[in-house]
Length: 246
Image (tube, rainbow, N blue to C red; front, top):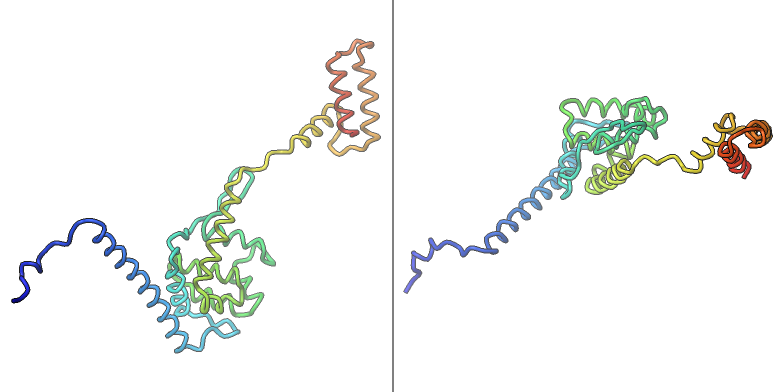
């Protein structure tokens, strides 16, 4: 007795089993990729002294950090993005948009990130600029953003908690884009009515109560129906006066 060789060539039954096997292989491959990136980072950290407090960031560290960030399961959800002006508002999206948004929190919003870092820790910004020379890929931009968020502690975050860095980026960008998606706030209706009332009385916005009273007395005399004025105009002037004096 023995095995029938013809059974070796049997095609697996169609259905969920094949799909399940493929999904399992893809999931295992993704898990292995993340594990390899993690192990490479650990090996590099063991072989290297690490970024010192003087800010000796290197291109090798940027590569290791970028690979560690890219191992996050939701890495593909991060977009490069940009900032754009919509009407009177500046709206932000993606990594570049978040970087522009953070610029407003620096001591000098006109400065580059590297200049801001050098102010906090001399040499850190210059070292980062040198390490990031070359094509500005998404992973390099994410590393740069980590320095924009965590400042001098960025090497510590990138080395010890790269996945948490990506979580933070995703949360910050989602909040930023949600804010940008909101319609521009319309002018408060009461403010609009008060502005119209000042204009009707021939006054600048914010005029004093005494100025409002004088303008009202003058216009009432001019537009009073007994003096040949319009009833509608008289009513509008009196309504404006009441609104501004309320």
